[in-house]
Length: 275
Image 1 (spheres, rainbow, N blue to C red):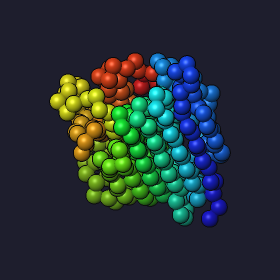
Image 2 (image 1 turned 135 degrees about the horizontal axis):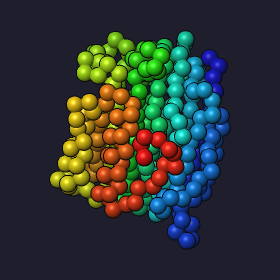
Image 3 (image 1 turned 180 degrees about the horizontal axis):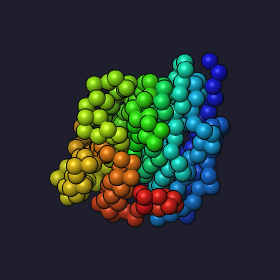
């Protein structure tokens, strides 16, 4: 089946002056990069899909490495979309590697599966030694304004986090409009929006005040909670009744985590409700 076969390959390193820069970069449609810039000592790279979204047969492979001493924030200027898929799937495969002493923050915009979409996503995050990562993922129920909440055909979503070569978290789920988990979600939120953040760091203890601060963000229209992973990491989960509320909770979680780690929060350079 015809489709685009795109890729993104980045290596973020540190120069003699201690500044992070892209030592290697390669990409092809439907992937594109805006001009990287530095904010709060972090290299900010916006990853852009200039097309309308992913179609049947499209496949994107992303490989990102952050070397020791480098600081990288990957973000996007707008939501990503998977369109109706009459046959086959669209697919995204992501591999992230963070060397000991490196820092990675991944902050994508909402992923929106449109009515009839079939989409697969596989993500592997590998962190070595005292490397650190904040890895956000988001999922919208669909084009809510068009009456397409949970109208996608099928989503397969897999994320694995490894620390020092040992798996400390693995999530895998397959969702359809008829899934029991979707029915349970709709019983609470007719248009539920979901987000998670994997936090990998040796500098936050399980009883650190930051986790109580994040738990305190919970409210009836936005469920927020966090828990420790097997070792060296934590996960924050959010389910919200709407996109604006989800963005506000995500922004609060991000600020809280950066403050707890003693870091200035880099600007995303986008005028949105998140900031």
